[in-house]
Length: 422
Image 1 (cartoon, rainbow, N blue to C red):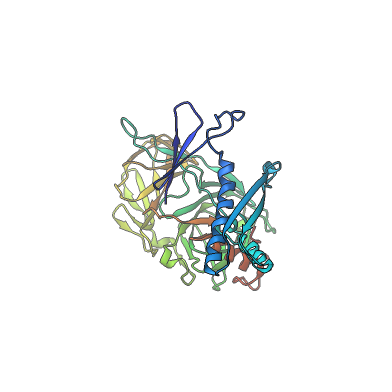
Image 2 (cartoon, rainbow, N blue to C red; image 1 turned 60 degrees about the vertical axis):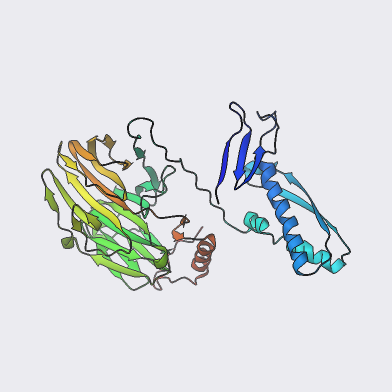
């Protein structure tokens, strides 16, 4: 179901709400800048709870042959601490009918089990707001450029996805550019302690340095530049990623890409798996002024050796200074992430991601360009990302968190360090 809201009269705050074939108005008080021609959004929110309780009690009474004739609901709110995260609703029920004390208590209990009450108090509600794509009146729409968000996870990373303007590109739901960073010898600085995943696949690809992967399947794998580590979490896996001692001692810079891809719905609860692909399996395709390595899927008429259960594309491209390259046409949703250098066309600086809306000819800047192409077929909602988990329902996310924190989730038995779920 889709609810649409549109301005009732130009220049006024008043809105028209269209729900299927039903229409109602909403407004705010004159003091708040409206004209008080309808309930405000808070009133509608509160009324949904009151209405749901009344309907739930009437349906329950009918099913249980309880002689309930009518339900009247009064609801008042205390929103004085709303800015601090507390929104209180006080509900008073009037139950009309020849009811016993036991029946009244039974109905009072049922009132708190109405769907809207549960939604408000027991369910994690996620609201994802985006701009509706509209064709430009003339010419082509401006391309979307995502700016990196820096995070400190023991070392600095640049986070591209998820972003406010773009939650994902194809099945790519999480994209981090790690480093470059060096780490203190004889320490655990920068180590990522063991943590869990469900419903997604992780792909680690390094430009320099090395990392040590360990997981609950028993894999203990060092990854170096040019190789690919693919871990399919499925129904559940935990792993750690640590900086090897020699990399610390020799002060080698660690830099690379860490990405997550959504597993198809029919693979989301599959058995977890891990595969390491050595760098020799990804030879560079030589194009005048450019070299291309296809890491996942198909690109430039090349198919990666890496097996993934959905159509996607992940490739590394390097252009010499001022060289140009026509990127292949694709039906998939694609983006380019500029890891280093610059692009004159389209204009892009290192650290930025451009979501492609048309065929592109890229022209490297005077310092060349090193970028990743990523994307694939769009994934239909619902897809929920919370902490390290991807799922199709909030209940599955909550279950995974509870299992991890309680110890019911698989863990590395000989590693006491683990990251609790928030």
